[in-house]
Length: 121
Image (cartoon, rainbow, N blue to C red):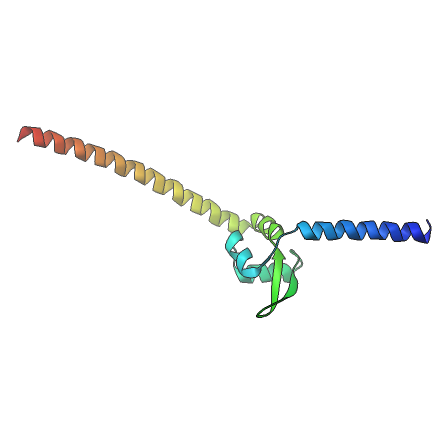
């Protein structure tokens, strides 16, 4: 392969990587924390361990760390602890829905009793 072909291949590879970086949504840690439902310390542990990429960028208030949101969401989905918490929250939501149904039924019964008592008097 000639130098020209090697340079062209390198250029095309770099252009493809740059395009991928442009399509990636990078967010500050606070936003990643809120959207993924993970703690900031978990995010720091993940990028320090190389599980998610991160960058330091200049911001009006000094250097700020940003992370790709998709990578954070993907890593959070693989977390057993977060999965258990989501399952527990889902279980609570189902329990609340069942309790609401029971309360609605009790209110219907109470209304029927009150109507019956109103007819008797």
